[in-house]
Amino acid sequence: MRNVIVIFQKELKSYFASPIAYLLLAIFAVIFGFFFYSATRFFVLQGMQMQMMGRGMPMDVNEYVIRPLLTNASVIGLFLIPMITMRLYAEEKRSGTIELLMTSPVRDLEIVLGKWFAALVLYAAILGISGINIGILYAFGRPDWKPILVGFLGLLLQGGCLLAIGIFISTMTRNQIIAGGATFAVCLMLWVLDWVSAYDQSAWAKVISYLSVVTHFEPFSKGVVDSKDVIFYLSMIFFGLFLTARSVESLRWRA
Amino acid sequence: MIKVEGLTKRYARAVAVNDISFEVEKGQIVGFLGPNGAGKTTTMRVLTCFLPPSAGTATVAGFDVLEQPLEVKKRIGYLPESPPLYPDMEVSEYLIFVGKLKGLASSDVPKRVNEVCERCAIVDVKSKLIGKLSKGYRQRVGLAQAILHNPDVLVLDEPTSGLDPKQIIETRELIRSLGGDHTIILSTHILSEVEHSCERVIIINQGKLVAQDTVENLTNRLRGSESVAVQVASVNGNLNQGEVRQRLEQVAGVSRVVLKETKDNHCAFEVESMQGRSVRAEVARAVVTAGWDLYELRPVGYSLEDIFLQLTASEKAGKKEEAKEEVKAAS
Image 1 (cartoon, chains in turn cyan, blue):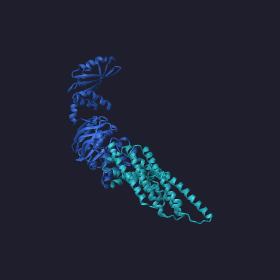
Image 2 (cartoon, chains in turn cyan, orange):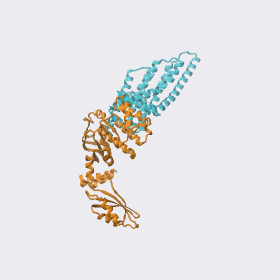
Image 3 (cartoon, chains in turn yellow, orange):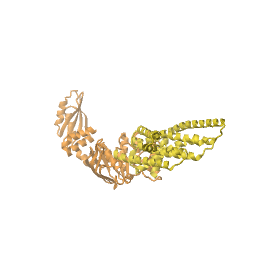
Image 4 (tube, helix red, strand yellow):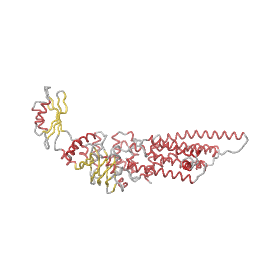
């Protein structure tokens, strides 16, 4: 456990010692800010029209603003995650520091976990930026906080699973661009897989669309914690980290 | 302390290390000698548990590298060929990280970091970014990293490569001062390196063990004959190189004369003596009495290539030519 923390601290520090962390924070802040502006603008406009038409039905901020925003955040995440994970192993392999890690009295799995936690914490920090926007909503209204919390739990679970896949891909190359590109392709595939269900109802299509990380996020964005989605994400995280550990082990044999 | 038996490492297409066996006693400094691509780094990587052996066994301090890698890693300090440094970390920050990684108690880490910084003379760059350091400093930070957890065994892969002469001397002294407490294996392709810091030498070529002996025994074996570079010039500017050559060949004890260079009225030769003869005095006398000027008379040092040629020549006489080509190809 101590070793996991040592690796975790080192990785987190190096994210913030280089421009990567700040760049990712900035990208997210700008894009999420734009989505936030559009969503609230639309909400306010819609609300005014409703009142003018004399239908005083109150509109739900959670449903009209926060829910689409959470879905958008999960999509922005797909784009940011490759940039978080691509360096984790590729850089160590390129610079030779992998030799230090692998000849230190530390288990491969401890290194993998340390790196994954660091990536997850950075991702959480990036999502944390959206707290500012959500805070603005609280200044003018009273959104229900529980669905928001559930939404963020979902974002973290989804992120954790894509980060695990990203680390795995990063162990397979010494080139960061290749690691990032491949991770992006896989993230994108896992996102669009559920489109299959739109035109195909066969058993295969069900399996394929089940693999889509986005379908499992939907309930979270509605504020619903469904154990089957939690289990899906946790097992994907476990599977990704397991593959990473095996891949790191195989470096010794293939080197 | 270190015991290697029948160690073999195969890569996908090539055999990097082929059936090597050796032992290193506690506290010894052993030089691992060989041209580039001989299998030095591979052997070291097996000892440090970075690579598993394809066949054979290696044990460090009684622990097998395959069975108990964590125990081995605790007892080994390793400086790879390119020091494993993070350019965006400060030196002290990096050493603290390595100290924790190597399992030092958190309370001991700052004290140990200070100690190794002083030992490796990097105190004045402690708060600098590693990426901004010169090659010499980086190498020393790498060395500091290897000795940080006070390991029983030190494995140093070409510790002096890329250093300037002053730094090389300092590093050699540092390594020698580390001997005794630590068992050290250092690899190099420079013979003088071994002569300066090592007690024993293990020579490998093409993945095979060529020789292992103490430094004295090996040099004695090799110092049988002597090779001298001679440069001769003529006073009146008329020098017949054939004549000089003939004169040199007549000197007692000379076995071979090779013309190296002719320039205006200068001729450079390389003169080889017979086994057990020193010919420098006679060569000088011969040149001077013939009325020529002696510009240079200098014993030619043995390079690693010479050692290889000699060793391979004496051990497998039939394959001499092949060995020569191998060394050429390797260098």
